[in-house]
Image (cartoon, rainbow, N blue to C red; front, side, top):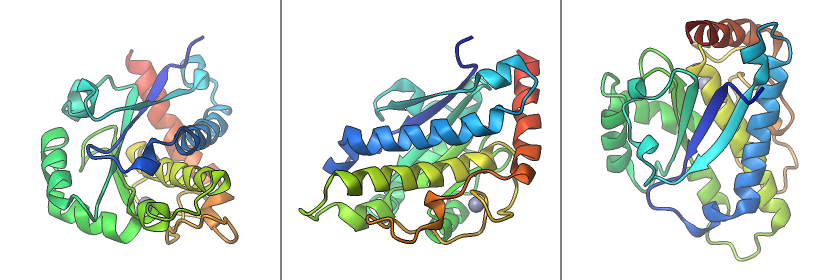
Length: 219
Ligand SMILES: [Zn+2]
């Protein structure tokens, strides 16, 4: 059975060159696939168990700017945004794709956590992840190597998974795993970054799986 769910990762409108690296995006894609494969492995619902296809799309793709309610319920969208460089662009994006949300409050949360996601307040199935930490870490550094790009992709994949966890129904940070209240930093050497080594915990799955099973049941 092909994957029932889709995660669409939307690249930033104006993209710094390092974000185009397939090494980075493949690592991010791999992390997202692995984390959600672990979540659905426990489900007895065949559609849920079929899991997620993770796709990167350019901002020019029409699915990037659709209202959240125009996307299929089985699609979860993550916008990668440049919080520091393009605050007004993000506010207009949020107003366009999730107009019932408070864009200013979202910006404050993004600054604190590095991203945000939610079902009711910012639009069902939507999450936004700031690439700022990533850009600060390596954009203009000529010493960036394959290992750095891989580490950054894995760590950004972890942050995107956290925000999607909120979009799948977890209201607040919890526990010691991917949904914990950790401060997100990109560490290119990956020497001491908790987000590299944590997964969704049983209490996270208890919320995410019923959300996914509810969506699968509606089709
Ligand atoms: Zn959170």
